[in-house]
Length: 420
Image (tube, rainbow, N blue to C red; front, side):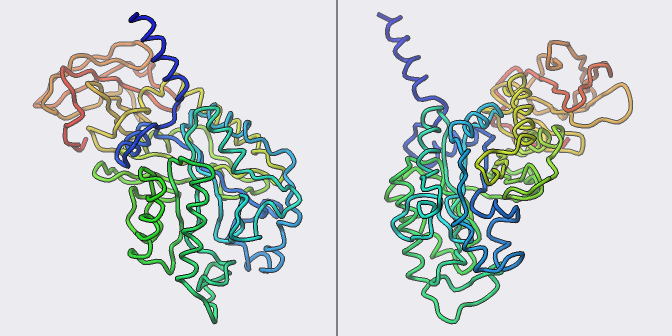
């Protein structure tokens, strides 16, 4: 009977996949922090031009030309299943997709505006297909949804860059539009991991909190970032790794190239840069939301796919030092970071100069039991004046990241972070 119960439990767990099955914001937030790594996707008709989404409206292209791009948008090679397979191969646990950027174009079958993908030549609800693909593969899904809207006549500001003030507008009516569309998305494609808002401009903390409160009537445990005008659940440093912070959740959003939307011949980050961004995010106790910009035909740039799969290969070997960890107990330094889980600390040595590597770590009040180099080699360690000095053969240094695994005699998760 016990074997039958165990089998049933395993099958149920498999069916749930990696997605959170939680009931409170805090529980969902903890799942999200365990996941550590997600895929950001910026995509829309602007990919036809290869310029930046939202920001190139009224800048590189006239407003009329930009707004008319959807009439040419026909990404016949779009395959939601393939996108999700790429995310999984990269070791990503969740996806955040642009439902609507600042340009106001909606990538789903919305009933609140005709300015949407169902009126393009493509006439397919990509968000519905992506939602179905994520559910099938056990990937959590959220949506980026611009707080501002430079196309909607009720929003007070317009292009270029939201710097032009409209003669007439109605912010209260626009706020209802934003709320209605947010609810529509959650109801049609949820439950969701997150609603990721952006660029509040005319929204203050009261108006922004009103949006959060409204969508939580529909899904009480949904996460919301800090860009509605209100504080939300987590911070969002952009195009940089956040500072060490374990008192409030955070997520770095960053492009794999130079631009959020697809750019021809974009410079893709090296594998070392990609991995260091992920590792430094985890070491600072944050997540990495790593952006790709699909091409106008609906496919992801092959070089971006290749790089993501290389990240996944590294995570297949060393993901245990990233997933489910928290930053610390040693704060980041120029040579690397640390992550921790249970009674183990993982020192990530990202760069080293000189020979005979020797690292000194402070005493955290718990006895150090053993030190290993990831891969099975033992490292020597000795106590010196209230610190522990770890030394190992220079030949064991790895080109991208050398991981030193420290086992302690007790749980170290409640140790206050200290400087190295």
